[in-house]
Length: 173
Image 1 (cartoon, helix red, strand yellow):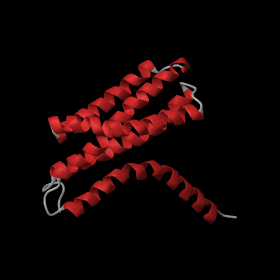
Image 2 (spheres, rainbow, N blue to C red):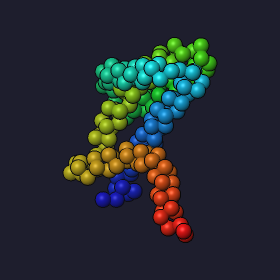
Image 3 (tube, rainbow, N blue to C red):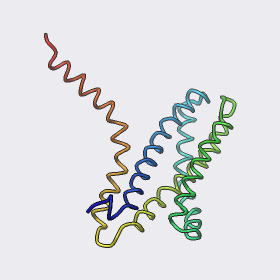
């Protein structure tokens, strides 16, 4: 199987998934830092915000399924990425000081709707791209491409630990 030639749309989509997963993981860690430092939210308040994001993912899946049925999977995926990007870009305008804590809960609902939209549509889009007879092989690549971002985030810390442990082990005494 040659992704570069035979399945070029699949390759492009896998790169898109890797970047989207990396953006999602980065968003979560940046959001926690932003709410703590800029909005001065306490741990309990940040926990409520994260719970809202998770909770609103369910209605997001239901609501945006209708959008997907109406406009098609590929267009829905592009619209979902645009929705996610716009929501994330305008959020700091309305949440830039501690007195704007309550706005974060509203944006948490918007982000949850976006998560509920993007993740199911990503999988549906990929399933449409998979050519018949290659389902298990290409689904394995899909899972791998999702995990690339996780590995990339953990790699610097893991590499640092490895180097430190090796330097201690082989250091002259």
